[in-house]
Length: 193
Image 1 (cartoon, rainbow, N blue to C red):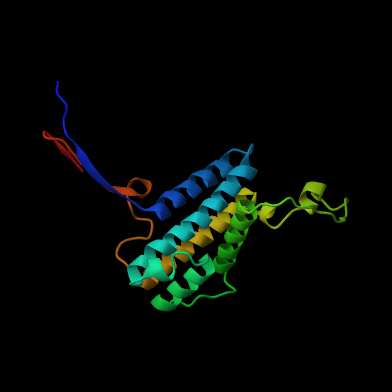
Image 2 (cartoon, rainbow, N blue to C red; image 1 turned 90 degrees about the vertical axis):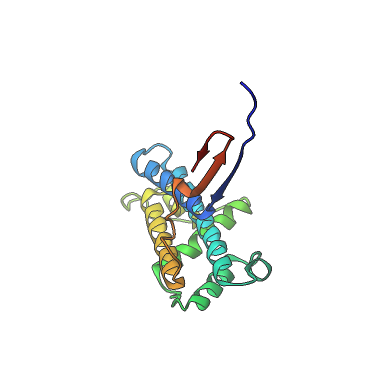
């Protein structure tokens, strides 16, 4: 049995991979109570990465010099530029824009994390009001399956709307195998696609 030469090529769509990651984390958060706080945060963080990757994907499709002009810009600048270019009415008061701002605030809070000390007072007679619930950062409020579901749905809606406005072929998350497609490898005796 001799050695065979092989070669291959595949295309990876990070926005699809990260959306699949978010979906997996959300499904786990919604079905397994233990750890749902962490899975909910993973979902929301993955949606921030999904948006950033999608902005880079669509930006490269619609701008000639996306890499040079926008690649290193903040997500808000990228979103505004894309929306303007494809004539998408970006509603800054919409649920989708709110989700966009919340996931990037979460990302910033955790990636550039600093110790925070919270203090306050609350009515302990109020049903369900505990110190844990009363003393939360804005990003901690995303640590529930309900909040993660909202973020997920709204971010997906934003991407789909941008994709439609850009009139790109196919669906925004339509790549096979969770974002990895066009896999080709070959040896002297066989070819796989």
